[in-house]
Figure 1 (cartoon, rainbow, N blue to C red):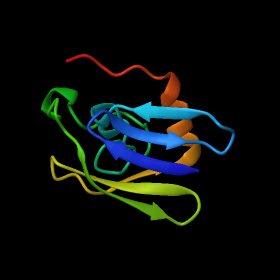
Figure 2: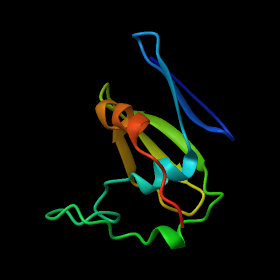
Figure 3: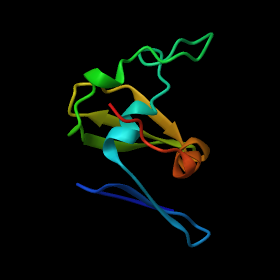
Figure 4: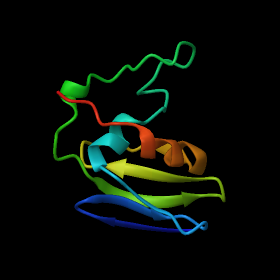
Length: 97
Protein backbone atom coordinates (compact mmCIF):
# COMPACT_ATOMS: atom_id res chain seq x y z
CA UNK A 1 0.00 0.00 0.00
CA UNK A 2 1.29 3.45 -0.89
CA UNK A 3 -0.04 6.92 -0.09
CA UNK A 4 0.55 10.06 -2.18
CA UNK A 5 -0.77 13.58 -1.76
CA UNK A 6 -1.15 16.41 -4.25
CA UNK A 7 -3.68 19.27 -4.59
CA UNK A 8 -6.29 16.87 -6.06
CA UNK A 9 -6.32 14.85 -2.87
CA UNK A 10 -4.95 11.92 -0.96
CA UNK A 11 -4.35 8.96 -3.26
CA UNK A 12 -4.08 5.48 -1.82
CA UNK A 13 -2.72 2.66 -3.95
CA UNK A 14 -4.20 -0.43 -2.31
CA UNK A 15 -2.39 -3.77 -2.30
CA UNK A 16 -5.22 -5.30 -4.38
CA UNK A 17 -4.28 -3.00 -7.28
CA UNK A 18 -7.08 -0.47 -6.79
CA UNK A 19 -6.39 3.24 -6.37
CA UNK A 20 -8.55 5.74 -4.54
CA UNK A 21 -8.30 9.54 -4.40
CA UNK A 22 -10.00 11.33 -1.50
CA UNK A 23 -10.76 15.04 -1.74
CA UNK A 24 -8.90 16.98 1.01
CA UNK A 25 -12.07 18.60 2.38
CA UNK A 26 -13.95 15.29 2.31
CA UNK A 27 -11.09 13.78 4.30
CA UNK A 28 -11.20 16.62 6.84
CA UNK A 29 -14.99 16.31 7.29
CA UNK A 30 -14.67 12.55 7.78
CA UNK A 31 -12.57 12.95 10.93
CA UNK A 32 -13.92 11.01 13.90
CA UNK A 33 -11.65 12.41 16.62
CA UNK A 34 -13.18 13.59 19.92
CA UNK A 35 -13.03 17.22 18.76
CA UNK A 36 -15.04 16.43 15.62
CA UNK A 37 -17.56 13.80 16.75
CA UNK A 38 -19.46 13.15 19.94
CA UNK A 39 -17.90 10.00 21.35
CA UNK A 40 -21.22 8.51 22.49
CA UNK A 41 -23.66 9.45 19.74
CA UNK A 42 -21.22 9.85 16.82
CA UNK A 43 -22.92 13.17 16.00
CA UNK A 44 -20.74 15.62 14.09
CA UNK A 45 -19.52 18.50 16.25
CA UNK A 46 -17.84 20.43 13.44
CA UNK A 47 -20.03 22.66 11.30
CA UNK A 48 -19.07 21.90 7.66
CA UNK A 49 -19.68 25.57 6.82
CA UNK A 50 -16.71 26.45 9.04
CA UNK A 51 -14.28 24.13 7.25
CA UNK A 52 -12.61 26.08 4.42
CA UNK A 53 -13.25 24.82 0.91
CA UNK A 54 -9.49 24.91 0.29
CA UNK A 55 -8.49 23.00 3.43
CA UNK A 56 -5.50 20.74 2.78
CA UNK A 57 -3.27 18.34 4.68
CA UNK A 58 -0.10 19.94 5.99
CA UNK A 59 1.37 16.72 7.38
CA UNK A 60 0.60 13.00 6.93
CA UNK A 61 2.22 10.29 9.04
CA UNK A 62 1.94 6.59 9.72
CA UNK A 63 0.18 5.40 12.88
CA UNK A 64 1.45 1.87 13.32
CA UNK A 65 0.28 -0.56 10.66
CA UNK A 66 -3.39 0.32 11.02
CA UNK A 67 -3.83 4.02 10.21
CA UNK A 68 -2.49 7.37 9.09
CA UNK A 69 -2.54 10.65 10.98
CA UNK A 70 -3.28 13.91 9.21
CA UNK A 71 -2.82 17.55 10.21
CA UNK A 72 -4.76 20.14 8.20
CA UNK A 73 -4.30 23.76 7.15
CA UNK A 74 -7.27 24.81 9.35
CA UNK A 75 -5.07 23.91 12.37
CA UNK A 76 -6.87 20.64 13.07
CA UNK A 77 -4.15 18.12 13.88
CA UNK A 78 -5.74 15.16 15.65
CA UNK A 79 -7.17 13.21 12.70
CA UNK A 80 -6.43 9.50 12.61
CA UNK A 81 -7.92 7.41 9.79
CA UNK A 82 -7.78 3.62 9.87
CA UNK A 83 -7.23 1.84 6.57
CA UNK A 84 -10.77 0.34 6.61
CA UNK A 85 -12.27 3.80 7.30
CA UNK A 86 -10.33 5.28 4.38
CA UNK A 87 -11.49 2.47 2.11
CA UNK A 88 -15.11 3.24 3.05
CA UNK A 89 -14.68 6.89 2.02
CA UNK A 90 -14.55 5.72 -1.58
CA UNK A 91 -18.32 5.37 -1.61
CA UNK A 92 -19.16 8.50 0.40
CA UNK A 93 -19.97 11.74 -1.38
CA UNK A 94 -18.64 15.05 -0.10
CA UNK A 95 -21.15 17.36 1.54
CA UNK A 96 -22.20 20.57 -0.13
CA UNK A 97 -22.12 23.80 1.81
